[in-house]
Amino acid sequence: MNKDELRAKCAELKLDTRGVKDVLRKRLKSYYKKQKLMHSAAANGSTDTYFDYICVVDFEATCEENNPPDYLHEIIEFPMVLIDMHTLEIVDSFQQYVKPVVNPQLSEFCVKLTGITQKMVDEAETFHQVLKRAVSWLQEKELGTKYKYTFLTDGSWDMGKFLHTQCKLSCIRYPQFARKWINIRKSYGNFYKVPRTQTKLICMLENLGMQYDGRPHCGLDDSRNIARIAIYMLKDGCQLRVNECLHSGEPRSVPISAPIEGAPAPQTPQKETERII
Figure 1 (cartoon, one colour):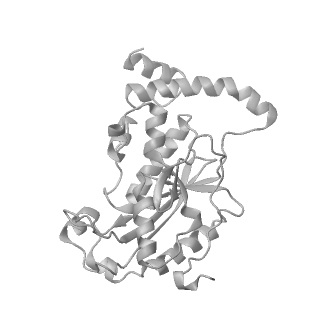
Figure 2: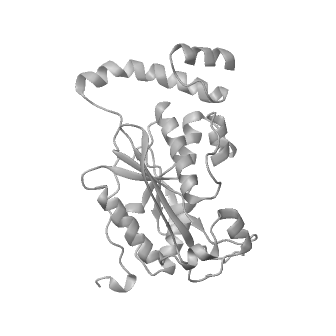
Figure 3: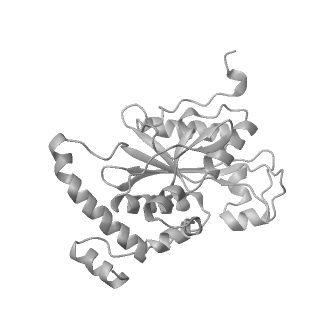
C-alpha cells in the first residue's frame, strides 16, 4: 500500500492519519494485532499497561560552544513531566533551575542555546536542594508506593552522563530510583523500524506528523514534547519498556527478556559523607 492508501485505511478505521509511510504502516499493524488480542485480554482481565505513570526527564546543563574533553557539565535545569498511563495524558510537571558551582558563570553559547540566564541560576538553589524538592514532588504523587512508575529520557545522556556527573560533583549518592529508564530513541527506532538518524527529537516529531511546541532546549518544553512522542507511540500500540540502566557509572542496555519492574520509591538524597560505613 502506498502512503495515500495507508492514510485512507487509517481514516476508515478512525485512526490518526498523521505521520510518514512507515509510521502509518506500523499503526495499522498494531491496530490489527490489538484487535486479535482484545477478546483474550478481556476474558482474563489482563492489561498491557504495567506502569501507572511515566516520568519524562530532560536536563539542561552548562556547556561551551566547543566543550573540551574534560569539561564537567553541571545541571542547570531540572524538569519532569508526568504521563498518566491510563488516560495517556500529561497530568503534571515540575521545573527548578539549579545554581552551578564548578562553572558558576554561564557561557554566552549556553545562554543562547537554553534560554537560561545568569540571573536565573544565580537566584536558584544548589543541586542537592533541588533534588530534595524533586524527590518530595515524586513522593507527593505516591510514585513507587501506591503507583508503579519509571523514567523516560531522550537518549542516554540525562541519566548516564548529566545526573551521574552531577551527583559526583555534589557528593550525593546516585538515586536508586533513577538507575533504570526508558530511552525513547531506542524504543522509537525499534518500534517504527527506522535508523538511528531518524530518532532525534525534531525528526521523531516530524515523522509522527507533529511540530515542536515551545522553545527548543528549554528542558521543560523538551520534556513535554518527548512526552507527546511517548503518548503517540503508546496510542500506536507500542509497549514502552525499560531498556537502559546505569552500571558501574556507564549506561548499559537492558535485555528485552528482563522482567518488567517499576522504579523504587524515591528517597531523600544523602550526601556521601552521610553514608553509614
